[in-house]
Amino acid sequence: MDQSYPLIKPNQEILNYEPTADEKKTKIGKYTIRRLFEGELDEQDNAAINKFLEEAGPFQNPIWTRPQILRFLQANNFKKDQTVQTMQQYEEWVKTLPINYDQQVEQFLKAGIIYIQGRDHSYRPIIVLNAYKVNFNEMSLEQYLRGLTYFLQVVVNDMMVPGKVENWVILIDLDYKGMIGLQINALKQVMSYLQNNYRSRLYRMFIFNTTMMLNVTWNMAKLFLEEITQQKIIFVKGDVKQLFQSVNKEQIEEKFGGTQTNRVEFWPPSIISANFRKNV
Image 1: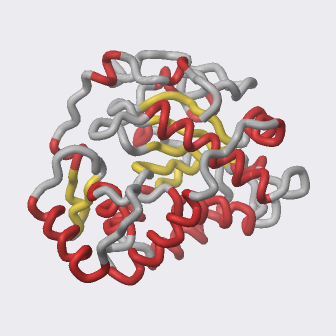
Image 2: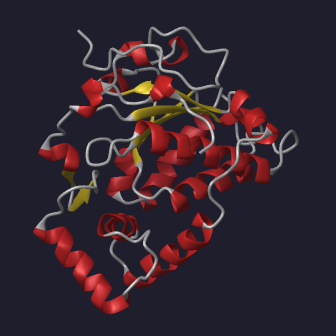
């Protein structure tokens, strides 16, 4: 990275934070999922990694640390062939990094399509994605992906703390746009890009300002999704209590039910309030 963003870096409170056992690894229905990968892995994790390496390894690229392998294994439901394929794709993508900060990247970052909002109770970065602003008539897919990559590398490098903070929360604003108003194919490409290159990073996704048709579509689609994925994606229909169970209102803009003034400037990134803990 060729820029510095001191206003979003972890303060001493975050660096001193000790996650609970449930924040490191938790049970969702029949699944046990790990949220924090760096640091000490347990017997179950190491057994899964060793089995995979015996069947598919070794992997010579130094990016494949044991925690990183586990991240990809979990994201692929521990399916060997699928994991190998996505690891190979990831290796090719890593060759395109880092993204240089240039005029096109700056234009994307200042457009308010995606920006940093704050942190939740466990200090996870909160990202806002104004999906209704995605428009390939104004910027090319390449410009979107370059800008998105630069942005997320800032989040990973400047906001995460390995072993303590490794996930993010995303708030998506659809601005009541329907299937016609939203560029669905464009959004699919953006979301697929996120999923493929930032494995096991999503903690929660809250989707705001949806239409009735999109709500119906989601209720049908989620029947085909695994319980883990269903729990991560939450359609907010007026009641924002679920969001504020894990986020202080000072971290959230008024348009999402928080107390922070709606942003009109989006870059360079900043965190307005250092009050991350529970609402009182």
